[in-house]
Image 1: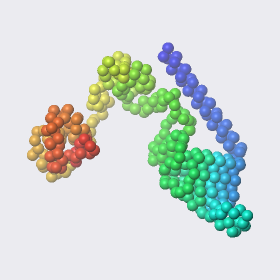
Image 2 (image 1 turned 90 degrees about the horizontal axis):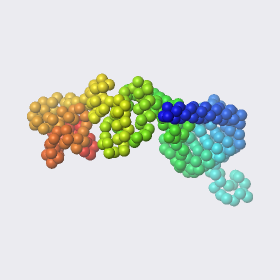
Image 3 (image 1 turned 135 degrees about the vertical axis):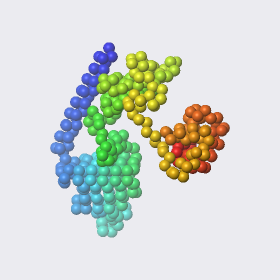
Image 4 (image 1 turned 180 degrees about the vertical axis):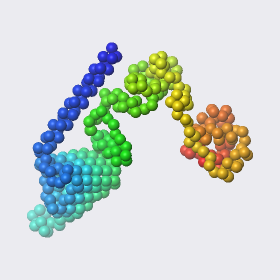
Length: 347
C-alpha cells in the first residue's frame, strides 16, 4: 500500500512540474508579445507612461511591468537586473503649489533624481518620490510609499517570500555556491515539495541520522531515500513511552545503525575527529606541567571540542561548586576562555 501511495505522490508531483513549466512558457510568450525591448535585456510592458525618456537611464536586463508611470523633469537611473512591478509610480518632479491655474513656470517644480541600484525588486502599486536612492539588493513590498533613501539589501513593506528566496539564491550562486531543485524558479514551497527536497539532501550526504520523529514522520521518507541511494542510515534510540521515539525505533527494527554519540557515526564513516582546539602558545605549554589532575582533565576535553558547563560536569565528575572556581582560575591563567555564557573552549 505504501508503494502505491508513494507512486501516486510521485506521479502528482511530475504532473504539477509539467503544468508549472507549461504555464511559465505561456507567460514568457505572452510577455514577449506585449513588451517592447529598449536595450540589452531591457523590457518595458505596454501601458507604461514615460514622461521624460531623455532623463532615464536603464541598466541591462531590467524590466518595467505594465501600467507603471515614470516621469517628471528630474532624472531616473535604474541599475542592472532591476524588476519594477505593475501599477507603480516613480516620480522625479512634484509641484510645490496647488494653484494649478498658474503657468507651469510659476508653480515651483521640485525636480530631483531617483536612483535605483542593481538587483532591486519593486512590488506592485509602489510609489517612489523624488530625491530617493534605493540601495543595491533592496526589496520594496507591494503598496509601499518610499519617501527616503533605502539601505542596500534592506526590505521595505510586506514582501512575498519568493522575492526573498530569489535574492538569497542569487547571492549563493554569486559566491561560487550552487542551488539545486527539482522545481522551476519561483515555485512556492509547501508540504508536498519537501520529499523531493529531502531526496536531494540525502543523495548529497554520506548518511542520514534520525534523532526523533512520530510514527509517520517525514524523517522516515528521507531515511528511505537514503537507503535506496546506498547511504548509511543511523537512528538515536529514545524512551519507548515517547511518541517522538517511534520513528527511530522503527528504523532500528529495520536495520538502521544505532548511535548514542557523534563518535559512533564518525567511526562508521571512517572520519577522523580532528581536534578543533590546539594549544600553540609555547609559554602556556610550559605551564601545563603545573596544572592539577582536574585541570588537565578539563583541558584535554576542551582540546577536542567546546563544551557547556553542564557537559564538563558530566564528563569530569567534578561537582558544580568546585568546577566553577576551577574554570575561573584556568581563565585567569590563560588556558581557557568563556566563549559565550556557559560555553568554554581553549584560549
